[in-house]
Amino acid sequence: MKERIVFLDWLRVLACLMVILVHTTEPFYLGDGGTLITCEANAVWSTLIDSAIRSAVPLFVLTSSYLLFPVKGETRPFLKRRFTRVGIPFLFWLLFYAFVPAIGSSLSDYSFTENLKHLLLNFSDAGGHLWFLYMLLGVYLFMPILSPWVEKLSKRGEEWFLALWLLATLLPYLRRIALEVYGLPEVWGEASWNEFGILYYFNGFIGYVVMGHYFKKYVPVFSWKKTLSFALPLWIVGYVIIAGGFWYLMPKEFPIHESIDLAKDMETTWTYCSFGVVLTTVAYFLIARKFTADGRVYQNLIVPLSRLSYGIYLVHFFIIGVVFSMVSTWFYGIDPWISTPLIIPCAALLTFAISALITKLISYLPGHKYIIG
Image (cartoon, rainbow, N blue to C red; front, side, top):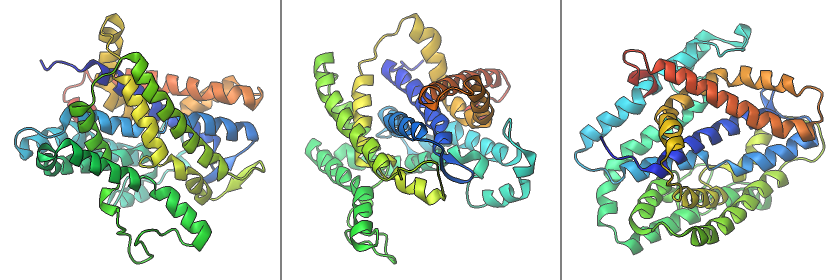
């Protein structure tokens, strides 16, 4: 049996919980098909909590990179394993979310015909979290192509690539500035008829793939003192950028009930490949590498949850709505300054626990690997 990398198990469980926390925060600034913030308390808590956990998806990519990149051996067996492990369950849940209404949802709002039509080109609205699998499968497709390059690249060459990628993570901010100054969100060669700016090929999640390799090959595990001396400043600066940008772009007169375009604008500094999120991701990864405890908690809780994490991710969207509604009733009538920061983690933890139980039960079925990986 392949030896487990202890900190990656801890990190995988943490990242999975962070994703669910993101989704239990969303109802406090999204609703009715658009941007909906009912009061200042919800605005503040959404900003403070969600800004701290935007690293969830990048941490998943870093984990995959640390384990799989560069690709060893032939491309075909690698892709076959990845598409069996990830792709087939993805297809199963793509169909599942299209045809099975989530628990607590209204059948009157569920259109099987529209969902089927949507599947021809994309995931259905009911399975919005599946966007991540399209991206991840794309990363897997590119890993064998990138592997010979990174194996021949020097440390300095890898640092130059990462430096240019970090520069590209400023693009969401620069486009926002260009919109305010010039009226068009286009920078460095971009135009309404050309999206291929000078840093186009240094953009996206591939940067996290290379970063995972760089950490594994060149960055030692530091002492706690040195780890925190790097991680805490990175996290603080990143968090200030993420939270500050979201708050700055949010109107301050409540309630807010606008189109979804407002939320998309507010989330400029929340995008996964933006500079602030990169800084907090690096901070979390540095700290996670210090998680080496492999005692009873690790063996009996973390390892099983880590093995179930992909299934938990796939399942949780099916129950999160009804869990959130139930938890919200527990705090009905309590001031939002108190109730909102309680609802978000309670709903997330309960969703995580129920999803883990469902995933565990599925794991007893024949052919379960084609459902939960």
